[in-house]
Length: 214
Ligand SMILES: Nc1ncnc2c1ncn2[C@@H]1O[C@H](COP(=O)(O)OP(=O)(O)OP(=O)(O)O)[C@@H](O)[C@H]1O
Ligand SMILES: [Mg+2]
Image (cartoon, rainbow, N blue to C red; front, side):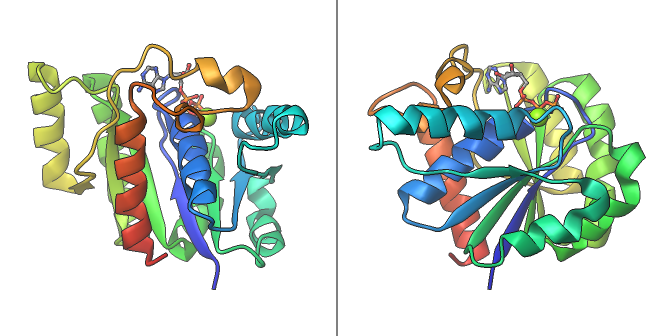
């Protein structure tokens, strides 16, 4: 049975695509057959997958992580295309108001939802109502704090407020200046033997994997 992991947030730039591609690579490195589905018309996730495919022609040692583009209006057909896979990782656009019916239907069909949130007041203002919508449709909705710095009071304030609303992933993604660098070749921090931030993504994947029973 294919598991669906939905990554959703109404806030642009909160880290949906960064999280989706790192989880793709983790899953593939663990030998899980995984397909990425990109419902965002900007195709950030899909373009990353295309660059990865091109990189793998020369360097096939990087694990395969295919991403396809999908149309949210016809979300069921992209999901059906991945029925041979064990896991679908679904990236979504920030414009949730334009696609509310599709995203809420998709969320109720998903096995788990991750809602990334940067630790700022602005992100909290949009994530707080959104996680409540997600929880109404799926109890397995978890906030992942991004660009986090545990030493700041803003981190403690944001975490303290969000934890009253929903489950917060025990591992957060720190501020990582170089997180975008490997993306130009369709890679992630997890494709290198040692890089800062790797452990956070590995631990988030371990949390997700256990939750999904994979
Ligand atoms: N932990 C981090 N540290 C530093 N930069 C980050 C981090 N997470 C994301 N970014 C950067 O923030 C930008 C937005 O990230 P990303 O594209 O993943 O967000 P998104 O939620 O998918 O955005 P959109 O809603 O526009 O699709 C990117 O340039 C990315 O490299
Ligand atoms: Mg994105």
